[in-house]
Image 1 (tube, rainbow, N blue to C red):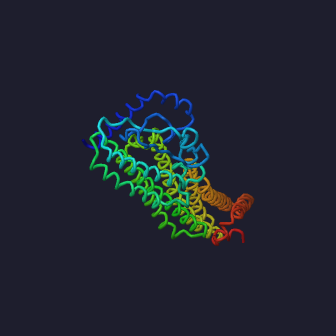
Image 2 (image 1 turned 90 degrees about the vertical axis):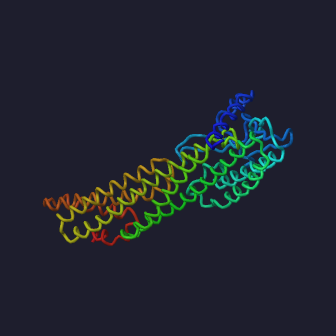
Image 3 (image 1 turned 120 degrees about the vertical axis):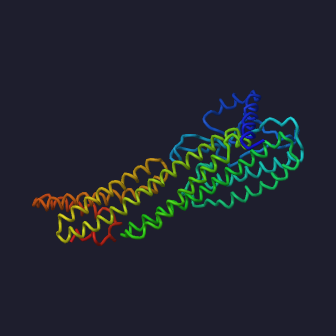
Length: 391
């Protein structure tokens, strides 16, 4: 049986498990505000221990509610991972034929993967949900999660030696959980590095530089592309339905995490575009300001107009990035800086054109407005060429 066929079988078994559970609808209705992982009774998992203790729970702490909100990834999905419902177990129907040795290894692997998810979620802080882990989560360590994933491989290998045909479905399902966690942790690490490269690029601008930002920008682009690769691998190699071997609502968590990644990918792509525009705009602003202070107003107007256009595009790209609902506080300083530069360029353009038209009143008015914008942001103090308009 190939992978797709087995995944289809998993889906059929899951569906059968849901239909067999008469209390599932009652439990879900009592808890419809959240999606549980390992805490509702929709699909009892029974690997074939025949009454032996095989229950698992996500015991993440005393706070019963942990949610994934739209500010983190564009979704309003809420997951209730612990709390009073936590004493109920998620499980799947028992295969018609089982091997007890295989069952014991399956239980061990599932427990280890649960621990991996718990560690992953723990980096997110109080909310304890893997979707609360973002590029700003400095404590995140993919190696801690991956060590648990690796620890689950040996019992799964052992399970294959003894498993019946029915149990092999569960082996594949647990392998899928490991694949999902592996690629999500890889993506998480790439996103953190992408954020660092974005900040490095912007720091060059804050220091008045227009020459060296592009190396960090290229790295930002590369890391963003790798995140997309990881997301593509998750979608192609890890089926969301298979994740229900961990919890009845795990596939909702799967989709929510991927939605978060997609929002972050789009955000970094917009930031990449904005960096390019700001780099071009700042270079033109410097050239235009030099010509302006040398009283070559007609030539200055040309470069200042180019600067205004580029900085407007950069500001718009950063606004789009911030509008994705993720990394808003990290993007705001760059957006504010781009806005200040745009206003300086726009007012100097007006001032230069007024001087060309011999309109001294407008020339002075817009020059003073440009100076006011310049003085409104301390980060412009290192831009010696632009600061000359104050002298």
